[in-house]
Image (cartoon, rainbow, N blue to C red; front, side, top):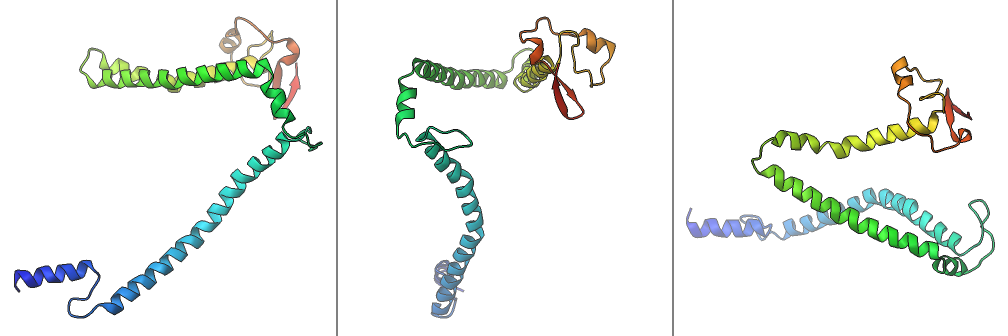
Length: 199
């Protein structure tokens, strides 16, 4: 087989043609299968698309309806147009909150990016105690868990007990009480078998 014949066969194969024929039937069959595949993909994706539209679209529309009414979560109330927006935009508290949110976002995003980039570059170099720095990278994963558990302990504990009375604690755990209580006694709750009652 000559080189010209081989190249011709490869070219026909790339176009979807048979080695010795016109290939018209192969092209039509390929197009037909392609159309069937597209329809199959569409019907398989349709339930997911409808579900996503319902999950994301309905709350968005309902929030827009509530924003133009003076009701509550239970009652829609009367239509007030853009009065709610005018009230919020004319409030100094809104602009203070917006300013704080903007600064928090800028500092949080760029600050975490700079810290992460610095740590990544630091760990790529051969430095003393490199393993220690790698262990320190676990702190962002560990600290939120510790803070959350401590906050919940303070919420459910009372002034006389460092943990809920219904939980099984040892003497050492009772001695580990929080240094201060910022909430009044009526705000402390005790978890008892799935129900909560104010202390």
